[in-house]
Length: 310
Length: 228
Image (cartoon, rainbow over all chains, first blue to last red; front, side):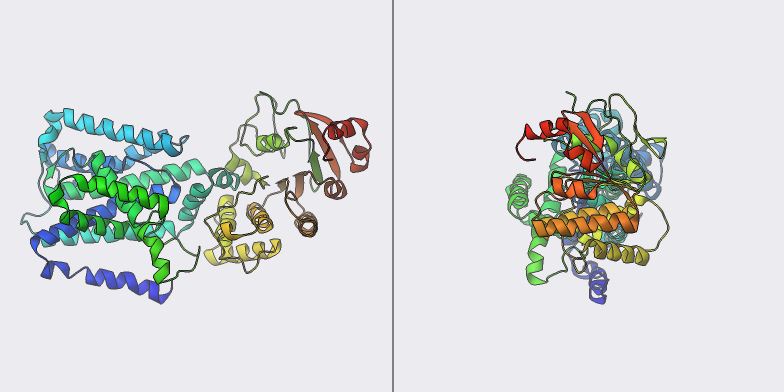
C-alpha cells in the first residue's frame, strides 16, 4: 500500500470524529442511518460484487439481526450489547444455510431463491405478531441509558470502520482473490483447485453476519423494530446504493450509501417514490456504467489497473 | 445421449499422448470426465492407482491434474499476476509467504512468455497471450498431468511454433505427462509419443504417430471430413 493510499482513510477517520460538534440532531441522525447503509451495502457487495451471487436477502439478514437482538432484550432482558452479537451469530448461521441451499444456483435462480427467503421471513415477522408485534413494531431498549445521538454516531462509526477493515482485508487477501476467481469464471476457478462451493458459502456467511450485526445496531438505535427493516423496499435501496456507488469496488458502496441516504432526505417530500427513482437510476447505471460512480474516478485519478480491487 | 462410450486408455508418466478425432468425437467430453467436470455413468478413472471418478474438479486439480480450455478461460477482469496466483492458491499448500508466491508467479509468467504483463488485465491480452496465461495458471497448480485442449487452434504459423516450443520445454524441463487434444495434425504427430483416435465417442485406434497416419480406419474417419 502506498503511503498516499494509507493516509486517505486515516484522514477520513479523523474527519469523521467531528460531525457531532457541528451537525444538527437531524443531520446527525442522517449520518447514523448512512453508516448503517454503508455496513449493509458493503457487506452485500462482498457477495454480489465479489463472488457474483446477487442475493436479495441482505435486508432480511439485517432484519434477523435486529429481531433476534430486539426479542432477546424484550423477552429475556438480554443486554443489547450481547444481543447484537447473538443476532450476528444467528444471521451467520441462517446465511450459511441459505448459501448452502444456493450453491448449485447462479444468476437469476439464486436471486429468486433469496427473494423468496426474504419474503417468507417478512411474512413470518408480520404474522407472528404475538412475538414480533407485527407491523406495529417491537419497542426495544437502546444501548445507552442516557440517550444521545453523538454516542450512537460514534458507536456506528466504530463498528462501520471495523467491518470495513475486515472487508478490505478480505478482498485484498487470497480469500478475496478466490472470491473474484469465482465471480469471473466458476469452472476455471474449480479447475484451478479452488473449492468454489466453499468460497461461495463462506462469502454468504460472512456477508450475512455483517448484515445481522448492522441490523441489530439499527434496531437498538431506532428503538422500534418493524418489518420495514427486512423488507424488499429496504433491499432495493441497499442494492441501489451498491450499484450506483460501484459494485465490486471497496469504496463504491460507501459513497453510494452516503449519496443516496442524503439525497433521499431531500426528496423525502415526494413520498416513497425515491426508492423507485433510485431503482431506475441503478438499472441505468448497471446497463451503461457498470462500475457505478467509482467508474468515473479513474478519469480524475488513474489507478493502476488490476493491481487491486479497491 | 452418450458422447463418450467405453473408452479405455492409460497414460504413462512423462508421455505426451495426443487425442485426435473429428469434430464431435467426444475429445473434450473425455477431458471433462478426466477433470471431474462431468462424471461417467459407468467406468472408473484412476490417477496414480487412486480412484478419482467421484471427485470434484478442484479435488482432481489438487491431486495433480491441470487443464487448459478449448476456448480460453482466463479470469478476464483480473491481472495476469492474479490469474496465476489463483493456481498457486488452488494448490492449498500453506507453505510459502506472500513474497515467495509472488516470485513464483513472476517466474511462471516469465516461463510462458508473459513477463512484463503482470499487471495487465486478462481481457486486454491477445489470443495467444490468453492461452499462455491459461497455461501459466494450470502450471501454477503444479500438476503431474497436464490436459491441453486445442492450444494451437486459432494461432498463426509462427505462434504455433512458439507454442510447440513451450510444450517441449514443459515436457523436458518440468517432466510432466501431457494429454493433448489437437486438430493441427502435423504438430501433434510430431510432438506425441502416442496417439489415441476417437470417433463418435469410441476409441477406434491407438498407437505411435507413424502407425496412426497410415491406418485406413483413421483415414476414413478423417476423410469423411475434409479438414484433415
